[in-house]
Image (cartoon, rainbow, N blue to C red; front, top):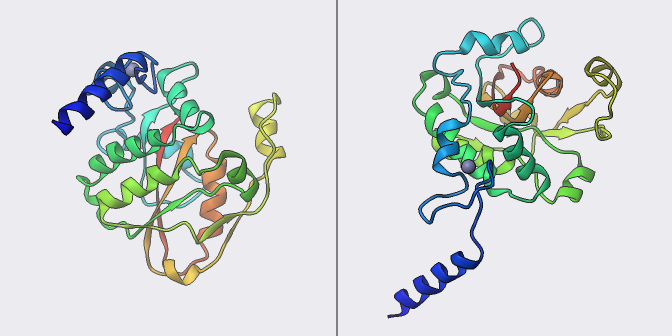
Length: 233
Ligand SMILES: [Zn+2]
């Protein structure tokens, strides 16, 4: 009896406050979570860890040494992926990161190159930005990937040093030269001779990831791979 009453209340609540798809904003059916079935099929998968490995290499090639790189989605302007990441970063929908982490983690757990990952390291936010937002949008994403790969999530090694102002309307090139993000490390000994997976939300120029890799690479014997929610290729 109790169960049926609580189910009834839940159904009633749903009738008045339907939950919406985090990408297309249509109401979700009762059996859908975070994303509607349509979006789950339509979101443009990167599939770099399966067949498109060459495509992602050109983003980082010649700039940093990495083992493997992948991204769940391909990023286009004014797209479902953009809505999704916007809702995650600016509308408090932290659970989106959890869902995307489960999705990518499930796929990576099938790929040999990702089985040797020891630690998942998130690209950190500056303290000030973390206070404004209340959460690092890649934390849940990283934690879920860690669970699927039997790796450990560790956010105490990489720290953001400079606070980058919100990006202005200057061109892509100027933005790149004017805002240099720098990162520091601490407790480096934890990562000696370890294979880490650096996780971030969107990669556009690759500059943030490059700065993180440059901060981490002096650690003896470290191997670095990269996984993001979305990438512009
Ligand atoms: Zn949808």
